Length: 95
Image 1 (cartoon, rainbow, N blue to C red):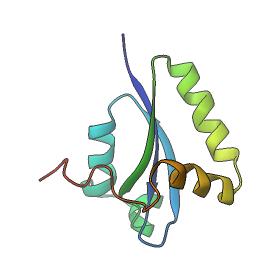
Image 2 (cartoon, rainbow, N blue to C red; image 1 turned 45 degrees about the vertical axis):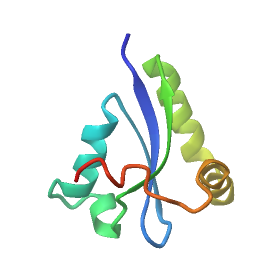
Image 3 (cartoon, rainbow, N blue to C red; image 1 turned 180 degrees about the vertical axis):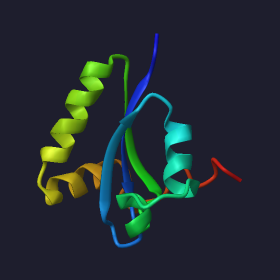
Image 4 (cartoon, helix red, strand yellow; image 1 turned 30 degrees about the vertical axis):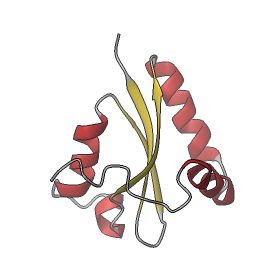
């Protein structure tokens, strides 16, 4: 059974990025270290502040779309419900 993740990254100024992947470790690494001119690189969005786990890709994609459609205050409440201090969940993954 495959596992899929919907995740939220944040910058130091709390600019948000929402994505979906089947390899959260690899994807967070790419956001942090892979060269590029993407939205996350441009705005320094590298801190993993929230993620959810799914067993079905269709459910994960539906959840990603649902989160992206939320207004910013609701996204912030979601993050703060599980991670009040906006800590980087992946802070020690790459040491």
